[in-house]
Length: 286
Image (cartoon, rainbow, N blue to C red; front, side):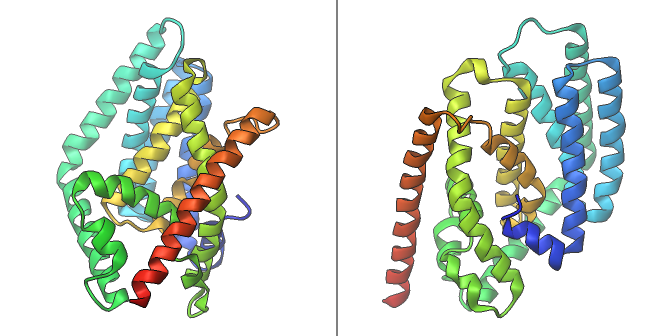
């Protein structure tokens, strides 16, 4: 976390994003803590109070983030339903019911604002991308963000974590905003294999599918997809990176088997990164 370029950016020049990071981390901590304790009256009350407060606070920090409590409620419901645990308790069923009511009520009440944020965010960032490149034929826009929805979700999520491509484009020192993003890309060359290994372990071994692990998985992927479908700005991903980092350190790397698996995935990822950068050089040269 100390090597994360986006966190450097928040600390140096984007104070509002620093507060958004703090608020999201605090909310996520509440959810994970209560999930670890199982559903009790105290934990449910703590979640309800914290999420109601979060809806009000996020409205002042970044208006799109008012949907974060709704998303975490849905991730909590999914984690209980798919976790490899024994029979659910009465409190867990009550927690599922309460979370569903909260999430559905929020969607019904704010469905117009959800569509507005999606349309405005998508169009504004597409326009900014075209202006930044000086033409509508930008490689990133044409190859990813102007593609059909399924392609955009898959390729856009990969691009979100690897941005900028090429990584040295941020080191022109025209603005430290881009310098921070360049360093962030270098960090994620190492973090992405860890994240993928964690996802694979959860998929392969049902015994590892605990509620906290699944909650981290659903929130990490869900918020990544949401950002790709709206702003496609990896700076907005920074507020949710603690969730990604927690899931990334899920494997025990003191185990030689896990460490070898990491090295294999890292090698494949770096081959892909190098290939994409070489492709970028070729396309820009001709």
